[in-house]
Image (cartoon, rainbow, N blue to C red; front, side):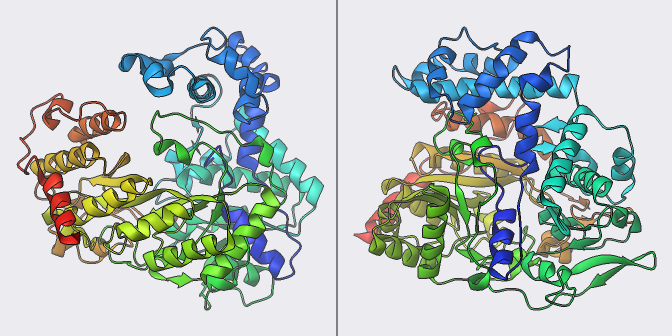
Length: 593
């Protein structure tokens, strides 16, 4: 489980690459097929405890969210067609929410929002009546998060299957019988995909006992770099790390086996990496074979920037591989997907865009870079305009000063509608410690330039960084409030800091004022590691207030409140100037003049 609205890019990238090397390759998205099978009257009728009103309405709602029955919007907005469970309570939290968000004529979007709340209610019912581990964007996630031992997964995989497990197995077996593959590659980007990946491998083995199974993606690349448990290879023949192109060529015999774990004589062995495939040589991603008609456009939060992650089907592409900055102290800078930077010429990228548009009929692109470089976005924008293409695109950046008002305007003319980037901690001392390479004043000017160009801005935010005090967190929230008030950002998300083993902080914890704590012996996954912070701030106590404030800011509510009002306990008063962001913008405007 990842996204409902568009395929996760790994299979499209690898399929395009392998076909460019002459490999007969077929791809499937069993996650979206599982969602379509699970959320159907046929399946829900097998669960008598699911209320009948959901069983009778699920098929029409799924058709509507797949874009196959737009006229149903009229019945949905009547508020008499769908059952309204706990997820609809959000509509009562703000007065006249629907009228504020959609007015009199925003019927299609209003219906999509209501249908999404219905789907979330139904997912809660699935969790209550069918499988307590199920969520729309993850499955059995807790089993795999930083699991030092394989025991939890091993036991779960040998327990009787739930209905969700059985449906996944049925879909896997059908794919195997239709394709009859020699090699099966399974990608698991996140912990919430790992249990499902192993269940898929079980099902493959049941019908094709001699097939070669390779397991790769973000989770193995991040968490399984110290893998020692040979039981993993009862189900997976190979576990690959980092970008999958070169390891897959090794498994297929076109290159030596590389960057890959395997089992030999009952023990886990690692085959070291060879030079990776340059980004310019990875080929054009393809969506051929994926069930594009099954994806759902969902609309959970009434915020125009926030919704683009889940609403609409986006072609996925990368401007560059890796991060050109690669210095943030909290980040996994020692891993390939951050450390290695590889780019492709702008004209080649636009060639790939045109090929993908011709194949899918979709002209929207999400660039999934760690941070797209400004110079490359300038060249890409110029190439798009030179070819006269009408495209819509967005992606992740760093809020650096190279994004001038002129460049932001150029990107907007070329079809850019949104950017996301890491502000992390809007507090000068900690922002310097993070080594973000930007200042709060600079972020204000850059985000304001994007907004003035008509490009929406989402900010990734962080709390709980080593030595961060409660007052510094409140100061950061106050500056975030000012950024919203000034129209610099339109959306954001708070992340709780986690110390990961591949970060600069883990390499030198004393330099950041913390001490590492003992860890259990690791034979399976290792990523997040425990530490002691002598400052002793209870960051978890602040979490609810931070999220509540941000939720309201994203809806234009409470921007004139003292930020202490969002907390149900006493917190320090913000000590930053109440005009900090306004002064930064005025100073920037003066320097430009």
